[in-house]
Length: 93
Image (cartoon, rainbow, N blue to C red; front, side, top):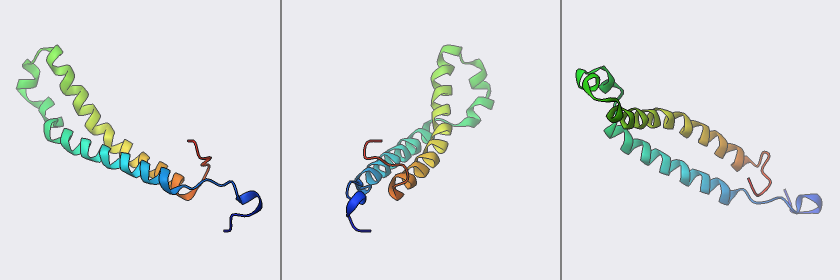
């Protein structure tokens, strides 16, 4: 497509797509690191049952973030594909 007439003002999608891919890889690295420390099977142990609630809370939040990151990574890849293809991209969002 040539940059003529009303196609002249179409923004480039390369930089925003690469920026989104970079943020996805940061999320992947954080997810890998968190997965080493938080395991869902810990909830089934007697040690978790004996732990006071105030100490259970950070473990539960960390496990929630590791489980949630799986879906966030998938949706971010979907968002990146829309940005890279130019669908509904206006140069700002």
